[in-house]
Image 1 (cartoon, rainbow, N blue to C red):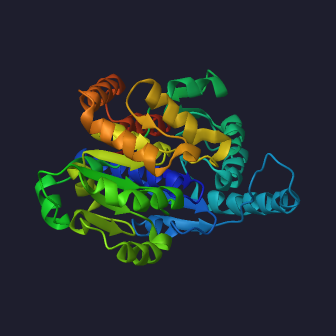
Image 2 (image 1 turned 30 degrees about the horizontal axis):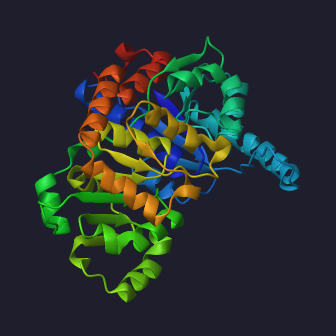
Length: 379
């Protein structure tokens, strides 16, 4: 089977594609199936190395951004979309994929349009509660639209839409708590807080966390993933603070293999409300304080976070209200109010039981619906 992959150039688009590819490869190895071939089409991106590192061919195209507001760039980007579509037609014609799997974003539009012109079936996945403009357009060309949230169905054609859930990284669930305590050199008797703001960090979250350190380090220890671009500046600022309990604080630009161990060790997570992050937090059944990014397209982070807060699985704080006093109050309440964390964990457990099998398997099933698996067995 030949699978064409496409998605916007952010971690929120690329990581789910890589999760799906990883699980397909495992499935094919376990069932002695012929290995699928892959090609990714999209613009230049910081995440392209992540794609090529797992053996996926990359074809670079032009891709214009779709905007709902007036901008002169809308006129120039129309030509980028046209050029990107022509480039995609050439690459797709040569590759001859069985199916296209799109994660959306403006970068997906040219490959999807080209695939539709060449009569290649398209499967699109929407992670967020509210789809962006690109996915609403892409959906019109798609055979199937896979969604993570049930009420996202209302934005698409009822005949096409299928609830699958959102894929999460399998390794996230395989952390080593004992190994993590040794690696981070943290005390097993002190509650651990994990803070992260997405692949690039989050200045607002970083700022409030650092200002709150003198108070929260009295009771907690912290693993803080601040993002590459913020790391050096924050380190200098923290050194100047001369923290009393600095042995309880660990700051990193990011973590690779150790992230799963940080997840296993922590008692509470502080995070943005990207769909990938939220679904991992829920799968791990970790209590959390969520600060949605207010500038996210269609306010989708706030809507994502609201879905889980309404079901009492998270505590949400709007960014404009995310200040030291409010944050520390909410954090201390999580450990002081009777059964608050336990109730959140119970609600997450109920939700995970409702979702059933891993969402990535649901997605793979819909992709492989366009191929006869029985014919792919190796001789």
